[in-house]
Length: 191
Image 1 (tube, rainbow, N blue to C red):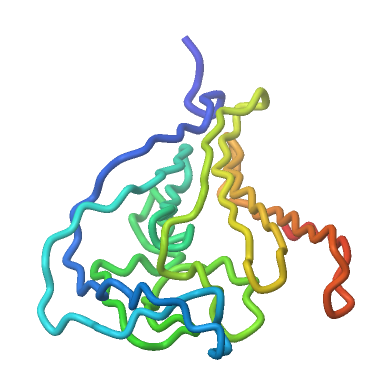
Image 2: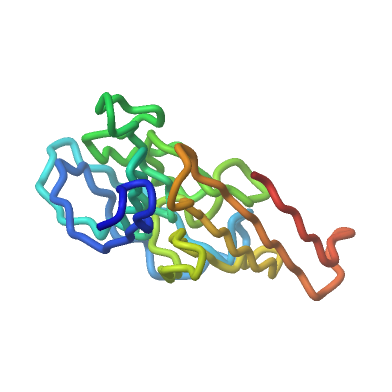
């Protein structure tokens, strides 16, 4: 038998149904004359909510539980300290999209992974790529990533939860292999 302190962190993918005020489908016709091209905007926002199932990556150890929403830009949606049940990162219980971001749709709460050049990232309300891993050291990671079409910049963010710590870390890897407005390759790590 071993103590709980020796247990590895766990990572799971679940569906959570939440009250959601969705946004509309975009105008499918590209508009090269608009500043957010090659992206499109979401301009319709619901007045009434509906129940919607969201994909959630849950990372947990004996101390904390962290939730990541890959379908909402990879937001770190919330985190709780398990011994008290208190949130140390606000977990919004409603997903209410409104016309805030460059592409329109944005919702409050959590930590937004934001590498946009105009306000919120173009991916702040849409699905992004992600991968989950169980690491050899007992920690778990959720890698979230996207390519910014304006700058052709690729970003990958690792959200890592150690097996035996009451915090999580974020490691950023940003790269751009073309010269654009002085951007070349950039690597930045933040813990």
